[in-house]
Length: 86
Image 1 (tube, rainbow, N blue to C red):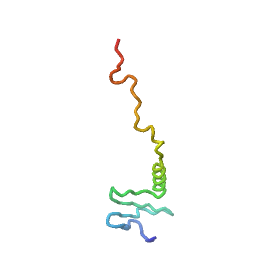
Image 2: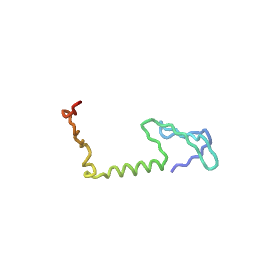
Image 3: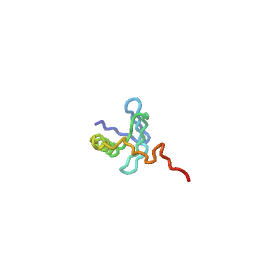
Image 4: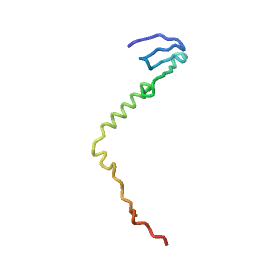
């Protein structure tokens, strides 16, 4: 792990496209601003971990769990079975 010291309003670069700027420091909290291309997702670690857990769970869906998908219940009136107006 690379450890850097930065002061407020100082920036580090990750590659050519990602900037991480120290926006504010209050006590033991540091606020960071991150500029990255749209195609790169940026998440807090705990959010990223939750997304990965959900994706893994979704990938473990069994074929029988999907058996009802794509089936449409027939319309009891059907296209030609409209009620007559009185």
